[in-house]
Image (cartoon, rainbow over all chains, first blue to last red):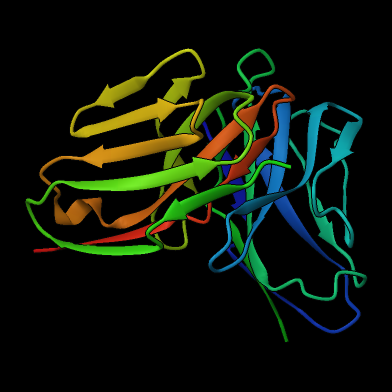
Length: 113
Length: 111
């Protein structure tokens, strides 16, 4: 099946630990995005990438890092510098020439132990 | 910076009723507006996309309107069904391609 796969579905982080959320797509999309969703708030953009080996910060990039070594993969690392990481994280992708169309993964829920 | 607001935050209606969800945005210089559906613990699914030059879009029982000058959009759902229960989010895309999402309206349709 074509689509976006996020893993794991649930993730727990200990104090001072870095954790990495996986996002893989087989849609051959150039652009990929990471969003954070908190209760009662809309999605907020963390990072996005329009091409391999290139990415830009979104509105809330502090405490997060990304890489884009392959077109199909855009992992997000939540570092220990992110003091309030508990949230629902959504990955999305879009074709470069149709960036008004975003396809979303099923999300990863991150909690702090 | 674009701010997107959705009212009401939650809505509960009996099955069969028609309903309207509201979305407002502060910067009218948008490229398009989309309405998404999100089921609990899931990702988003696009329902309707309205380009900035359009006034409305329809898909089945759903109709979305856009008044760019006043910074408003509505999503009309006709003859609501229990399967329509979900959170509905609107998002505006600016000319720089970034999406700005609203806070969502949680809809419950009671059988």
